[in-house]
Length: 151
Length: 295
Image (tube, rainbow over all chains, first blue to last red):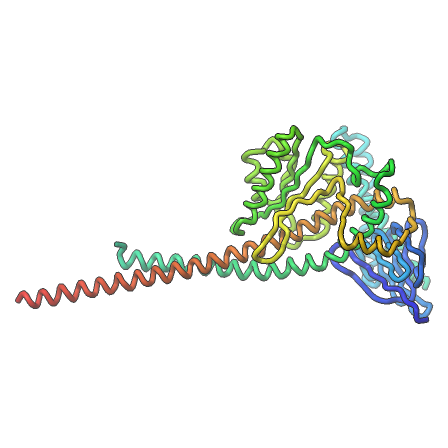
């Protein structure tokens, strides 16, 4: 098992991680995909979820990313994520609280949009969009935690 | 001839100023280091992003249905100019050179019959451009990244720009900022953000040489529609980082020469002070001696 993949994870603010790994599984928008050495060149968007790094056939560590893009070439797998954090940094209680507030706010915002004037609507819609995104990220985090618990 | 007391006061006041300028120089130097580190850390993402965008845009240009952010609206009527300045002064020619270039461009565009919109970042830009071009200013932002510039700051600038583009208010967007070369030199740079100029650099060539033909998941169009707004924020983030480093560099240099000038001034004043003192002593001696001789 000599062939390895250079895995890079970059966020806008810094190069989060760069290392040589056996295999990495990336949560693509159209399904997870594993990258081994010699993978066909691919560019894919990714959904919020956990990237799993495999060593010796099992998961060595997981990193949560909140969406972005992955570029794969035979030697290399580059993930450009907007934000990344190791999954052991995730705090279930905090995420659940946040999600609850978000989901409480969403219907209110939708109502407001229904009543809003033309000029206001655009701004509110983009706000709604960003809240929905945050909620999706929160749900993905919880799902990741559930997966880890299942093992 | 100023009196001894005047000179003493003068020296004291220049010394106090020198203390301030030299402290400002130190502060600027340490902020500069931090800004440079931050700019360094942001580079990998920006470079890789550029590579992906380049590889996608090469496939998309010329095709119908290419997103307007990439190829433009097909018109060239309204221009949005993003002018990046600092909130604070005392940074040498930092703001002046950006504003000079901004004015030149605005005049040129208006002469060409184009419509101009201005977005100013930083208090200095707002204050200066508001005097002549109040009617053109679309938005003014101050205190951007006051503590520490984050990517979120850049995204908050990008979002309304994208909305504005979506509603068809401008066809071209250019950002003006000071690119950091060294603490001594900052280069006024204009970078077109919309439509995206195909980044022709080492990254693009490398890709071309490797001849990698990527598969896309989902389609190119969908990836691009996600990537281009993100790329806009990345470019803005980079410009803001460069500008922040340049600001500190320019301030450091300006404060360094101010400190040196103050030192020279103190030397001159001290010389003058000593001469005046000596003259007073001599005068007194002459008075005593001639008094004694007269007896």
